Image 1 (tube, rainbow over the protein chains, first blue to last red):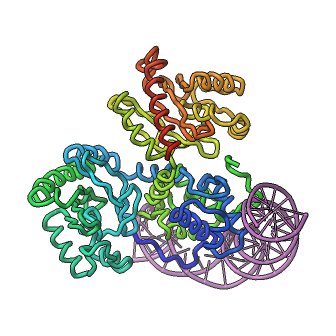
Image 2: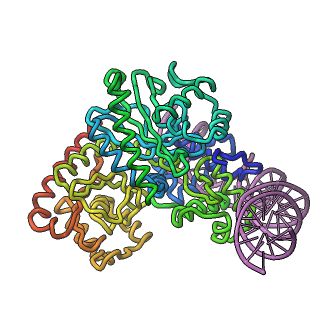
Length: 256
Length: 256
DNA sequence: ACAGCTTGTTCGAATAGCTTGAACAGGCTT
DNA sequence: AAGCCTGTTCAAGCTATTCGAACAAGCTGT
């Protein structure tokens, strides 16, 4: 139910419009001809679709090229602001960034994947592929694994079955057995570690934000270079700090 | 050309999908029944549309209600990052916020309206209706007026004709004559003032970021309470600071 | 406990409208 | 000036959307 549904008879015309949007997202601004070649339909069809999407400012035409409109930000920001704990989390994430000087992310789960809804950088924080709004596989990073470990077991199975366990580095968990061992460990510790599983040379720690039933709503992670985030700093100091923060958030949520 | 086009024969099925998305944006999560009532079509039609949009994670179903997916953030952030000067502007905006302790916004123009693509708050900064991604009328605020003043005259006419000059407060400019006088003044000064024209008790100053032809690509604004942003601070110190920053950005853009 | 209300979902038939492909207008280059 | 690109328009055909009824399932209240 919380995975993208297999629709029996989807609205194909809308699927085509989404295809256009996704193409422009992946490939940047494009001409009608380019989009037509991608869709494999008549040029006039593409034209009509592009103009329809442009009328709502989802697309913008510039020099005979179409690109995504900044309008998408509006929808995204509204979706984010409506998340119950976004406001709660934002200030705590900022504080953590100040205290640790590292990169902090807050991620939520949607359709069995994680999306970064807020990030704050400390003074020394690294820049990785991670980006606001970016979708990730749950098993590939600290916040995702923290979320995964606090979902119902059947849900975990569903997710693994749907998406598989694609690798990102040579340290990424790629088998169900490894994953269940890891989940076991996370549940005992209360937090997840990412030891170069998403990016070579990057370590991270993640802890879940749970609802009243103990199910994960999202997670917060601290990430930084492997040499700096290591030893007792990674396995004692940071966990204490992070779990404290997450605990505060959970309590505030329970009384909201 | 840079206004939302009047499409002769739009793809009505896509327009319906957009209508659904807009409804959820305005009204928050809704059930199929509620969306159906809004659309005025058969329940099965709504169902098929919702499921199609959910399959692409644009919508998320939770407890028999549909809401906007955080996925929109992804598209919005990508659209923003592709703007030539976003990176350039971001660090400067952060610096301005530190230096002034006030709220700084960067806006770009799309389809004759302005969209906030980045904002930074100083320690004392106020919170207004302004929001990341929010669309505004150009004539209603400082950044918008700064953009408007540095568009070609015909373009200004087009925009006024399309959107009119709706008021927001009793100080908002509402006639074309007033607007042209204001534009004249902005062009002479090099920056725009907003004296309670968007929010009662709020003053702001805005300056344009121009391309090599002198046409506005966007603008940066500083806003704060009327009592603090006033007198020589508003009309001398802040303009010097803002125009300096904007000038730096323009130079950097010219050599990018 | 059962009836009556919801809710979401499925399916066949009809027709609305999407797609097509050709033709047109305009701007470049050759 | 001819050719070849663009983007755009239009009529005709047929696909796919829409409709409305029927179904399953979950509540509510009698």
